[in-house]
Length: 402
Image 1 (cartoon, helix red, strand yellow):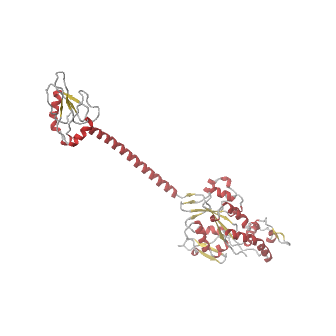
Image 2 (spheres, helix red, strand yellow):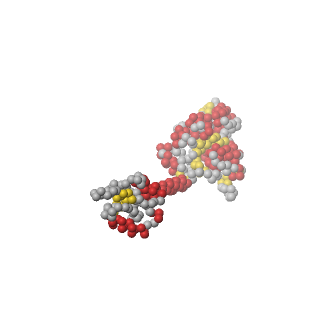
Image 3 (cartoon, rainbow, N blue to C red):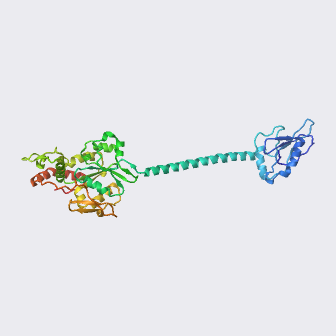
């Protein structure tokens, strides 16, 4: 045990002298304390010199008590006062302080605080690092290609150019779509949304998934089902002259079933009176306003964009500009992506800007229509005229079907 200071005292050597060590709670008594304190002087450093308390108590022989002091620097005195209460007070005999000196308390507390602070900083740094890694991993996962539910639907109308619209949209790098018609909302709704999602192609986070099924337009329960899946769904509706559409629909039917009766026999309930058979699908689907009201009742007009089937053939670049604006896509698909095929009477598309390889629609597109009597066409136009005018008013666009 090395004591910290030489003790100056007065009185008889036989008196008991108490020396308190600043480093440990230890008490030395008598001449041994004095000798140890003298011998330890050679090991002291200037900054560590500190006066502890030496109390020479009053013994049984009646000697007077003394408080022994030595000169100390001011800073050490300031550390000394909080412990003893000042230089003018004495400590009771044989009752060493139970507290650790202020210097030792501050050092120990500082060490404990520094260790706790270090642990807190390490824990906080680890937490931030883990959170950062988690966010990065989550962001990377979001950027992985995966099947997602569609954000836009081409809901119809049949034989109005829905396939052409989808093929033109596929020229855009931010658009992906499944190949065949899924028919989820009208035929396979019972299989659930997870099945529907698995039918979609893998897409990146910033890409748009579009699905096309023209029969959605006439499904009575389809608008509500689509709204239940996504109330923000964007809907694309392709329409054309209902008379031309009815003839095109009939042409497709004849291609599949050659034994189908003539168009006039199917279109009229009574050829002499000219009563139209609206129950025949090629005729009934052309009453667009009837089905459009169902969709307009569920979705606001801003989420339904009506595409002109005639302009999609005559001026595809201009019509595709409107579609891209509606979908929130950059205007990438333009006139230079198309060229008109004189044989099919339909525009074909280029695979890419670098390769001018043409890509026309399938053989089922651009079929030659059968000859229909002019009287039949006039009767059909008279039938559709009031429905067309109502439709133009609702959508806010006149498609010039005369």
